[in-house]
Image (cartoon, rainbow, N blue to C red; front, top):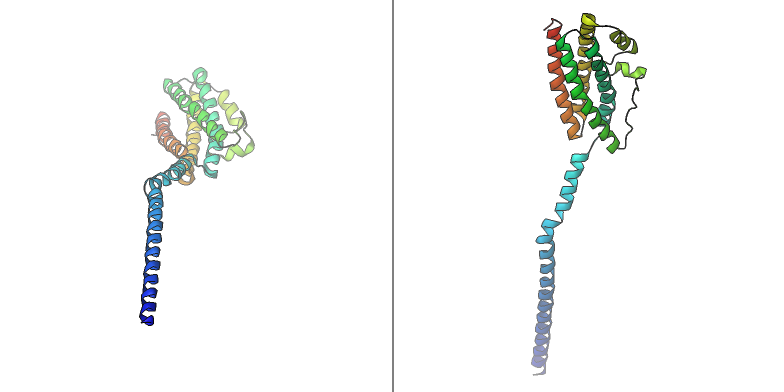
Length: 215
């Protein structure tokens, strides 16, 4: 009898312990369920959003060394084209050359401002006005000081021919620089500008060759 009572007691104790474990597990499960709902429900959708949008912002604003080189190279390049175009109204004989020069100035002046703004926002130095050192002669068809002086001292048909020949070379250099930016750049607006430069200046090269009778 005593053995039976002992077995009954042990069974009751084990049953009670099992019930307590189930209750605790149920409570813990309920708490975990609430937490899971909190993290995987609304919290799950909310928490990746900031990091996703931050990564999207970083992607839109990212730039690399190729973008910096493109901006720093294209600014003095555009400035020289504008300087050449400025000579046309008083020296060109051809109305087509004058019109082309005005179009070049109108397109490239705003791009200089945009390129300068990018460099400033990236913490980079904007090339100083008139910063035409000897290294720029190898940069995308830039004219030498002597060539610029020769153009400035010419007029009439001689100016038209010199302007067109020099600007074709200048544009060809810009197109090559823009192609490099498209291939290597990371800044979306810069690669888009490069595409526009390739398109517009390639069309102007074709137009200038026609004016020279080479089209």
